[in-house]
Image (cartoon, rainbow, N blue to C red):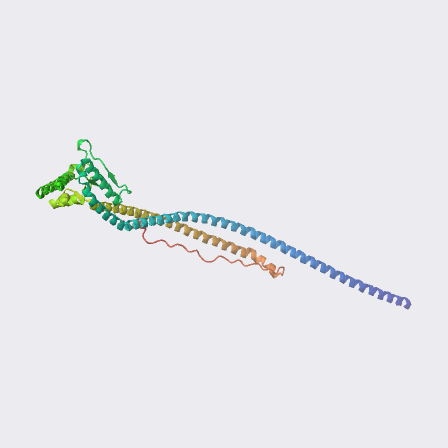
Length: 401
């Protein structure tokens, strides 16, 4: 027999139990949601931490790699820079010396040509002064030692006006030979090329002084003829082989210095062929004016010699500069090749990093882990210019003129 009362109670119990089960199920769902939310946050935190750790490890590794590369490149560049500085420094000093030589040559040239007018003016003044003093010295010249001293002073003054004293290219009061036959030239002028010119100022003047004191024209002419003969005899003595052989090296010629224009003109009037005879014996007659011109010519020859020496020094500097520039060009080309090799190494390293490291690192962007993208690294492109080989002939191939 069915008990409906108990059945009713059982149905109520079932309803209560169903309500309790639903509440438990709802509670379980809430708990599951909470657990899923908790584990989702935890997983995201762990993912972000792992991404941060991997990114930091990657950046540390990249920074260490590139820091070493930068240090190595910096050291290599510093070595190349020091080598380049050592190569350029001698060239810089060479250019300074070259500029100094050019300045010296220009200064000497300006002084030489700028002083010509002053020398001509001094020559005119000394000629006028000598003409006045000649009359006052006639009586004093009869004394032998006074006459000799006057000739030496006049000779020295002419040398000073010619500008030969400062150059020290003449020798006063030299003695050649020994014993009674010793020769005593008044001056030996040194010429470039180990050559020399002998100057003698001991011209005989007694016959000329006698002619000045004679009022009779016939006697005066006779004394002037004697003066010309004495001068000619002295020319023959100076032109003798024994006189020239006493000097080493043998003089180019001998200069007979006549310390007054009037002495020379009087002898030349009595014997017009005096100059030709003197040249035939290797003796040049010179008055103060012509001696100054002669010594001035010698001075210009020395200046020309100095110019040739400067030109030779500049040529040597040019040759050395050319060689140093060639060496430096080789260093520059080698430096360019080193730079190209460094760039090639950098590009290979960059390519390896792109293929092996950055490809994996960029996957984090696709997973949405980080919104910050990795920067792009560009390879080094282009080539280093090289110095063309100098094809022109070297300055050393030129012939000196």
